[in-house]
Length: 355
Ligand SMILES: Nc1ncnc2c1ncn2[C@@H]1O[C@H](COP(=O)(O)OP(=O)(O)OP(=O)(O)O)[C@@H](O)[C@H]1O
Image 1: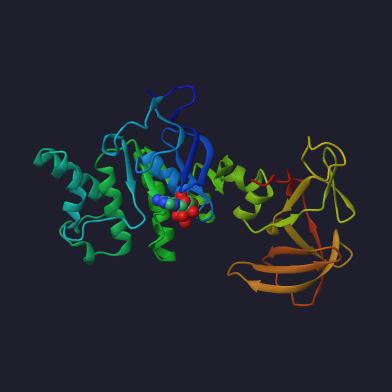
Image 2: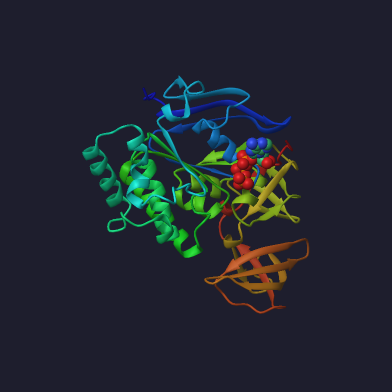
């Protein structure tokens, strides 16, 4: 039974994992809510796939517990778990056609022929593969292969679907299309999706909540907005989006910081008084250009890159180099001033303690 108060379908408690004496997961704990799209996000090697494989049952943790609806999941065999996995490579059967690939699990369970036909066709319609039932796997596109993999998993009616880097085999355009489709599908069928990705944008656009991981530890858990707008530490801020990280700022008192000798109003409180053990992040899209002497700091444009819909600039001021994103075209060497328009654009966080 789902715990109605918490709505948790899966609970991970203090999970550790070692391979050959090397610690991969350092005691991670988090909850997964029924019906949510949750993403494990982090750089290569941080342990996200290992976490997914422990939930699926392909790996066993060295210590800690995994609960499914409050019951210990660890002794439950892989095929008895109400969980299905879509692998990075999709792992389709090349010698079977689309229909038979999707029907495989039901046939294995000795389901009746009519019910197999009905359920497989339902999934085929759901993922938009009508008319392709008889095609072999090598006769369909990458996007269609992904749809087969999704249908093959969903036909087993799992409560939780695990997706390991599902977009990694797709080109950029198809990737964006499938991201939208997958999100829509998840909302339509309402089951819990747990996705692994190292792609920040993918995590931010698709997830209800994101678990940000680094070096076998959880750095932050939150909605995309929380993680983007309110990163818990400088590592998350950096990883989520290119940022201006000010490591030598000072938290003077509630709602006041000093950056490069100037006082600024901020919204942050509770970092003590005259505290140097903080980092300040200001996002490049929150910085604007002004005429020289009309902003916070004067500087010069030392680099510019056209990014398609905006320009990305490096602006050299007396104390540092700022990253600025703007739709306004400037010239290399141009003298400018920079400014931000709201105290909310300053993000103060404690300096990270190294793991
Ligand atoms: N079966 C295994 N035996 C030994 N080491 C392993 C095994 N599986 C994973 N590792 C190691 O554990 C670490 C974490 O791997 P994991 O696949 O969980 O990371 P990840 O965050 O998913 O990264 P990636 O995005 O590269 O897959 C890596 O250093 C990896 O080499």
